[in-house]
Image (cartoon, rainbow, N blue to C red):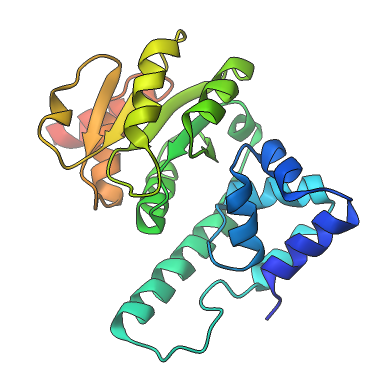
Length: 238
């Protein structure tokens, strides 16, 4: 199997680019670049394709990479589960590569969530929508605000308030003050108090939400997705 981390690092060094520079171009933290190059974190399909373009790497290399495990620890039920989820993520990323259309670059969804299972559920739910969306993973409030200021095509922001690594509350509070374009927000939280927040919020999902939970939330959002909403209404009436 090809080492994806080594491929990315080699391409970055060949371009004379630092981790910080590449992170800025991709709209992620430099720590994410470091984890990718060490094969410690799975890369979202759309981000991987964008990185390939920036680093001038042939995308055909990527379907062969091993994203399952990088150490020699014995297999356990939990490891097997993680491998299956990783494979699902890999397949989803390849489907995105094959089916992406021009609209994928026109409409963007910002996701501030570092839990792999939830990332996969969000991406799987997006594939059920009639329009393709470019998922952008950003993990701090400053980068999200800067991204919103330079991009007028963000359709939705999904923020985790449960992550131990992402300060979702700080991100949300900053957006409440600066989100002048009123981009709809979905919160990932288990706290009942959080679910009483109404300003700018179009939906809530629990911390361990699956694909169906996100589909339920997306079905209630009537911007850019009218065909999906109408289909859900028709299905529920049958």
